[in-house]
Length: 236
Image (cartoon, rainbow, N blue to C red; front, side):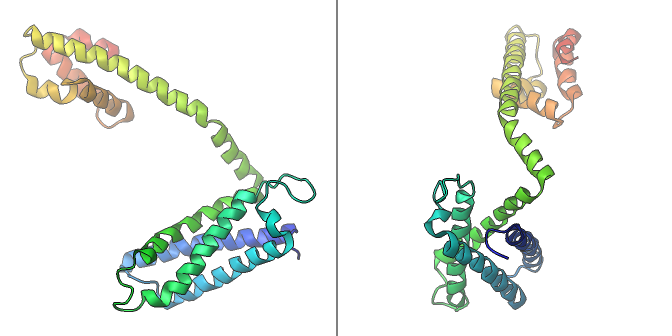
C-alpha cells in the first residue's frame, strides 16, 4: 500500500472518522465529569492518533516533498488538495506542541498562568474539521455538499428579499400606528408599543411572527382593538 493508492487514502479517512468519534466521546465524558485534564486513557488514545497522522504527513512529505503545498505537481497536474495538506500540517503541528507542553501543564504552579496552553486546548477542536475530507470518498455526500454550496448565493438573495419585505411592511405599520397615536385613536400605548413602538420593534415583531417566535394573533389583536378590524387584512 503506497501513499498514492486509494487504500492509503481510505485508511486515513477511516482514521479521521474514528478520531472525530473519539473527540466527541472525550468531550462528552469531560463535560459530564467536569475534568480539568484528560484522563490517562484518553491521553493514550490521543497519542495513538497523533502517531498515525504524523506518520501520514511524514510519508506524504517524503514522497511529494514541497509539491505537497504547491499549486501544481511535477507532472503539471493541479494539486486540489494543497489547502487540505496545509490544514493537516497545521493541526498536527499544534497537536505535537500540545503534547510536548502537556507535562508542564500538569505542574502545579510553574505554568499555571500560561495562556498558550489554554489556547492550544481550544484549537484541538479544529481537528474535527478534518472529517470534511471524508466526503471525498462518498459520491452522494459530496454531491449534497456541492449542491448546498452552489445554492448559497440564491439563499443569500432570498434572505435579502425577505428582509426588504419585512422592512417595507414594518415602515407601513409603524407609520400607521404613529398616525393613530398622534390623532388620539390609540390611547393604550402600553399594549401596542412593545410590538409597534418603533421601526426596530416592528421589524422584530414581524420577524418573530414569520419565524414562529410569537403568534400572528398577538399582533392582529393589538392592532384591531386599538385601531380598526380592517388592519388585519395585510396579515391574511
